[in-house]
Image (cartoon, rainbow, N blue to C red; front, side, top):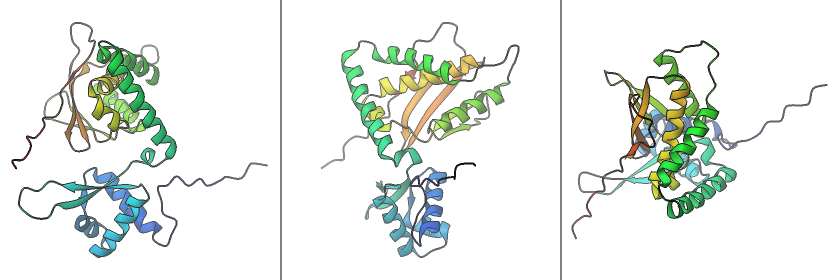
Length: 251
């Protein structure tokens, strides 16, 4: 006799009378991938702004959304916006892994010379391991290769997107970094690890493209990758271009 199926609650849906509506709001926040104001959420769901605010604050309290203050171009009160957290960001186990990642990242950055190049090599090893090897004599076109790359990055919680620039190759957008906190502290380490994984995966699938540049935090919750042709010599790292810091406001 087959064992009964046990329903496991993963924190992504509500268990109250508001569960269905809050699940809808969570999905909107995740799919939009950019912070939304209370009014924008209310308009999308079709509810009163006060009801939207109540649900959003409840989701923040539950760790299913984050609250931020958006910058304004004009004088006035700062606008509060909300962003949905991905499922792996809502579990205590994931929080523990991220803390471990921060500790190890800091230790590597401080103690190892050329830590970025070393992590790029480590990323290459894991990129090859995580990529399904092609069958003998199997060939893929670039469209299928990039689709497979996006699917793999999506499974690893990078929320990827390929953008057609009107010319080849496309740009790779990563709307989420599973280790964003560690990357903020040591982008040269974490970003090189991810770049190595991406390039080794492309190499394993015999792509004509490689990641050339990575722009961490080119916008809030967004990293942007630039693909280019395979270089003539073996790559030991990619160019990580840190975001420009805004000058402090005059007192």
